[in-house]
Image (tube, rainbow, N blue to C red):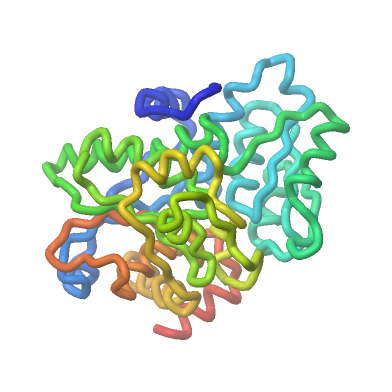
Length: 326
């Protein structure tokens, strides 16, 4: 695809991943509604294959690779969830996968990649460029690079989470006021925005980011992509990127109503609430949007809100930190 994806590409991706990706439910919880003073619908992508939404875009992208190119393999760079999504999609499609991961990535994620048959190549976030490391492997092997967000097929694939949400809302006769999900590179909210805006043109779309890594918020204010000053320093590692994607920002600049943030403490509180009341496991980056509801940055009072829990691949020690707050 040599253009920005549109809604019909999300529909096409949904057909492509049907039978491979899990159609996750749309949940509601009385305790959450009471606490937030509004109606909240929760899309738990922590129940997706590999424990995050990333499998959607990975399978859509890898399934498009020409048969003659598959034997050369694929290369992806990721802190973990995209890595696992690519590793599983590659295994299902019979494609060798090499994943470039930061050396400080949660062990549960790097172990997951290896368990799924992917080869892990580590790099240092502070001193090495993951794109340069990946490019060297691609040049040497002829493998296909699979970006984690800045790719039309990836964006369309992630957008299937939004398509399912919109379809389920319509089936229940619910019209949402706002849709809140995390934003790292911006592929998920860009793709979901295509679907949600198709069905609910007046629905506000809010990007949720880690406190101190609010590149989408600042980019929206500046009218151009603005980078984060730091590369590390948050438990919400899954959604730390240096700068919004080129393709994703073109969509998000047009579709987003704004952005909100959550601190690490906020996300630990959210993980604890999600476990206690929803009986689900979330990781810090996967709980960022949920945390932005609990901390009040995303105003839910008297509104109908949809929120995504985007991943559940949390290290045991971090999960314990969260549960100790209950």
